[in-house]
Structures are given as C-alpha cells and as structure tokens.
Amino acid sequence: MSDRILADVDSVHMVGAGGAGMSGLAKLLARSGHTVTGSDLKPGRMLDSLAEVGIETWIGHRPDRASGWDLVVASSAVPGGDPELAAARDSSVPVWERPQLLSALTRFMPAVGFAGTHGKTTCTALMVTALRGMGLDPSFLVGGTLVDLNTGAHLGTGDRFVLEADEAFGTFLSLSLEGLLVTNIEADHLDHYGDIESLHEAFADVASAVDGPVVVCADDPGSAGLTSPGGVVTYGFSPNADWKVGDVVHDGWSTRFTLVDPAGRDYSVTVPKPGTHVALDAAGVLALCGQLEIDVADAAAALAGFGGVKRRFEVRAQTAGVTVVEDYAHHPTEIAATIEAARLGSDGRVWAIFQPHRYSRTAELADEFGPALSGADRVIVTAIYPAGETPIPGVTSQLIVEAVRRSGGDALGIGGFPELTRRLVPELMEGDLVLLLGAGDINQTAEPIAAALGGLR
Image (cartoon, rainbow, N blue to C red):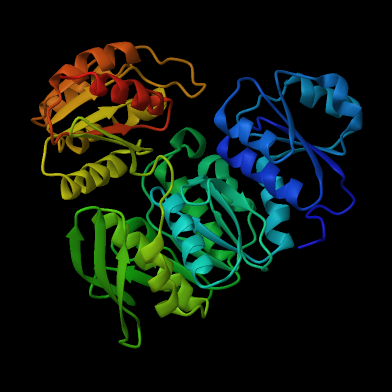
C-alpha cells in the first residue's frame, strides 16, 4: 500500500511510544511512508523494536524538536502537561490522542475489530493466522507480540485491517468497522466508565455503529445482550447459538473441537493452545470469517499453525522438570481460565504467581480473585503493580491472599521479586508448572526463576 495513512502529514512524533499499542501504531505509520519519531520516560523492549525498523527514539523529553513535527500523537497514559505536548501546542502542531489516530486508520482501510473484556488479543492474533494461512497479507494491530512473526503490527498489501477494539479509555468508540467480534463483557475499567451499565452502553454503541456483521458469544450474558441494526450472529456452546461449538478434546497443549455453522456444515478445528476458552475464541473468529464470506474450512485449517502471542500462555522455560508459563491474565475470569488450561496441559502441581494490576482493580475485585486463584495448588501474591495509580489506603495484595484462603486455597503474600525466587524455587518439584500471572512486570521473574532452577540438584 503506497499511499500514506495520513494525507498532508509527513513527520509524526509519538509520545509514550514504548507501549504495545503506541509502538504498533508507530510501525504502521513508518511503513506507510511517514517520518516517525518516538519518546518514552523509560527504556523497554517495545521502544527498542522501533529503532530496529528505523524509527528514531529517545528517553525523556525533547521539546526543542517540536517545530519539526507535523503531528503529535500521545498515549492515554501521557499527562496533558507533558513538555513535548506543550511545546507542540506552542508551535501550533496538532496534538492527537491515540483514539484519533485509530479512527484515521480505520477510515483509511476496511477494518475488522475484536472486542471484549477477555480474549480480544488472542482472537485478533487468531484472525491474523487464519488470513495469512490462506495466503493473504492483512494489515494488523495486536496488543501483544505474535510469537511466530515477532511483531504486533504490520502494514499488509491487502485492504483488510485486523485490530483490537479496546474498551479501555473508550478507545473503541472511535473506530470505523466493517465487522466486529465481541467475546464477553464483564466489569473492568470502571475507573473510566463509572459503572457496569455505562460499560455495557459503550459496547452497545460500538456494535450499533458497525457497517457489517456483529458476532457475539451466546454463552456470555453481557455480549449475548448486544443488538445491532443488522442483527447479531452468535457462537458458543449454547444450543441456541448460530455457530455451535462441540466435541471439545484437550490433548496436552492442544485443543480440538467441532464447529457447526448455521447451515449445518461442520468443521474440525485444532488450535495448539490449551483451554476451553481457546476453543471459544477460535470459534468466534471462524464465525466472523463465515459472516465476512471468508472460506471457513481454509481458515480453520490455518489455525492449526497458530504460534500464539507473547505473554498469553507463553512457555518461558522448561528446566529441571519444571515448566514456567507466563500469561497476561489480570482479571478473575482470565485467571480462572488460565489455571484451568494449565491443569489440562500438566499432570503436576500448578503454582499461580499473581501480581495484582492497579489498586482500583484490586479494591473492586479482591473477593473474586479468591475463587479464581484457588484453582491452583499453591498461590503466591506479589505487591500490587500500580500502573500509574496512586495507592489507595488499606488496599494491598493481602486482600487477595485472604480471599484465596477463604476460598480454601493455599496462599502466601510476598514483597519484591527477589523474595519470590528465594521462597518459590526450593519448593518446586519435577512435574510442577509455574504460572506467572499479571499485566505488570511479573514477566521479569521468568529468567531468574529459570536460572535458579538450573542450579538445583
């Protein structure tokens, strides 16, 4: 695709470029022919990946560069008083927030979105795998790194754009979509929406604006309640679903199932990831393919080659008979599903190492984390990852530890990561599986744990 995404714009500066969403957008703009620069307050793998594709980046602020920019795009996490944003405004340079750029992208090329409290990253990645496996070259923007492609963003040669329709900060309200999948709707991001009713209203607004098929999970009360001017198509285990999931078989780290379409045709599907939720995600993607008149049999065959997404049930190490798996799960429903998947793929004990994400989420959902985590044999809860939030008096990870114990689980609260390695590793036995759960920096513990395991005798 030779035309630039943003007409009459040459130079674009991205503030907060180290985030998964912003770094992906930077790559799309650069590959479209724009000159892109990026800044962030701290180094990281995502920022480094921009330098690898020729995007100039820096740590900190360079407001003196503002006069050379045609447009500035800021992450939702960047405060309005940021020096680069202030300098841009002083230089009469337009300043956009991320949703405005996503709006422009989805007007530039036909877009298919994947929404829901859980599963949207995996579903987006599954759709990319399906289309690429059919010989197509879609553009995509995934909120994670695809393992087999080592990127979360790509500007393809075709005209279809596959992306996450993220409800955080109301971002998905800015998208122009020709197709939408909604996996589920549960209480999350209430710091932005205020209450569950407002969250549901936002999803309803997005669904009603789609110019094409809207596919929703019949098994989830939240998504099943959505309506669309053109009607909705459902999938799931429910006998009332339009696309029915059945005959699920868990075979180690793989999941097999049968999908029956509205005309009664059945498809055999294999996805090399464990868990009932994986079957549902794949079924939703295939149902959307069918509604978009993409060959479902070919798409289903392609899913057998799914490489997965980093931090989504990603095996980080297998050492001394112990498997270490990292997963981004940070909501009770996600955690329960991930622990279930771990049990399906392992005969040994399952350890859940959970880093709570945000004080507000911990306060809202502490009691729900208890039964979700108690599905593991042993639970260790670290200090809360603040994600920029100010601490709330009385809200600590101990609330979750106590909730797990009330649910009959074996839980321990700890402080820093060095204590985690010191307390965990001597207790591990051959056959154990360690789940590192959370959306913060819990992933940093995988290598120290693996290194310590390598020293066991």
